Image (cartoon, rainbow, N blue to C red; front, side, top):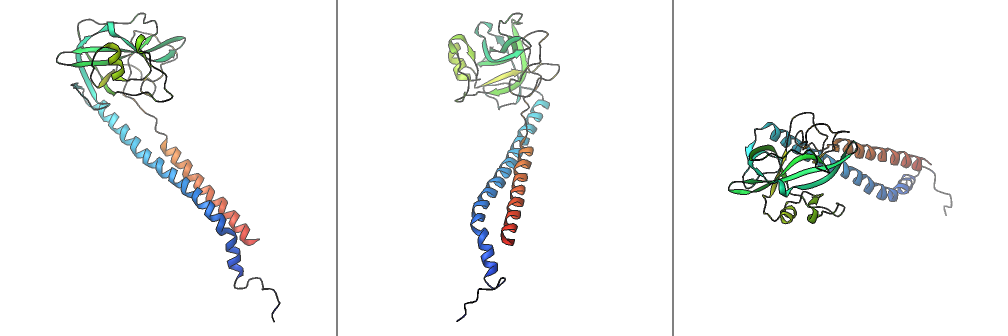
Length: 251
């Protein structure tokens, strides 16, 4: 009868050592999979954002085309017609210095085509000093698609014609018109306004109003940094688990 204990380093010792990390591995692997998945997702987002930025740059460099009854989002377009200044809409809210203002939306009546909602640019809330050209005008900019407000968006006020979402059907209903399914954001000359659809204006505004956008929208593109962060966390997780597993097996 052999009552002697099993010698250290016997046939079952390595197996017993590895069994001490098998169950923790089942908990560590899903975390690693999540971190790697998030990194890969950010890489796909990077490709998607780069494609958008490339298309925006190409659209801005291309000559404007006359806007018809429809237009692809963010294309370079121009439109000719007469402004309906009596149907102005205020969109959003933006403070410049100490002056509260917003973007001014004015319908442009076009011959043989639906009216076009034109974002002429930032104006003070009082609309003091706003230039309102009469007669036939031609405006140039980029085609802005209609937007619906989300759960956290500010509520629009159709009765006072103050909107926080570029919701073309709702704006048309408030004005009693059937506008085109896209809008036009006027692009002016001068220094570029900060990134974003509406953008945040300079610290203080000087000059004529409306103050139009200075280019096409330039969305932020932080996805490469996010991907590096997630992959780095995955690498750190592997290192931490490896050190822990080595110490557990050794001890």
